[in-house]
Image 1 (cartoon, rainbow, N blue to C red):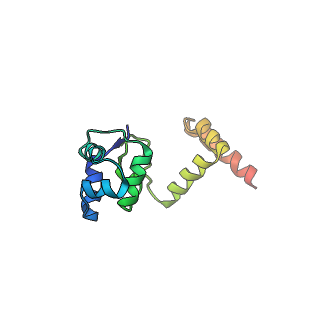
Image 2 (image 1 turned 90 degrees about the vertical axis):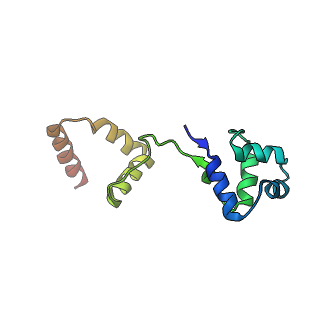
Image 3 (image 1 turned 120 degrees about the vertical axis):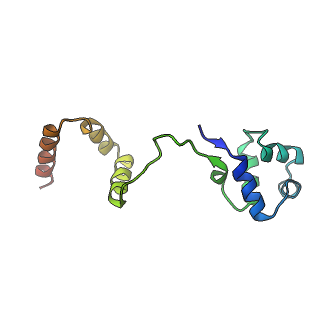
Length: 121
């Protein structure tokens, strides 16, 4: 599950040389709220609050998130693999074709390859 990272928040705060009090003053967010967010006590501040903090820290809300390290995160072997994967994800028909053929036996994959090359020509 993706979570708000107090470590990342504080790292950005330190890089900018700001205190919780200064962030509170610049964002007009009560200091008690800022303290809770930066200490990790408030794990679910509003997007509006996070956006105000991100604006002051010159970063995006994404920079505060610890993203789930599930297998969904792409790991590409090379540029061509990345391009193929992106093309499949963007095109519903390609995605359906891939899902239909990904578990075929080797002989059936060869048959499909021959058919696709024939259609290409």
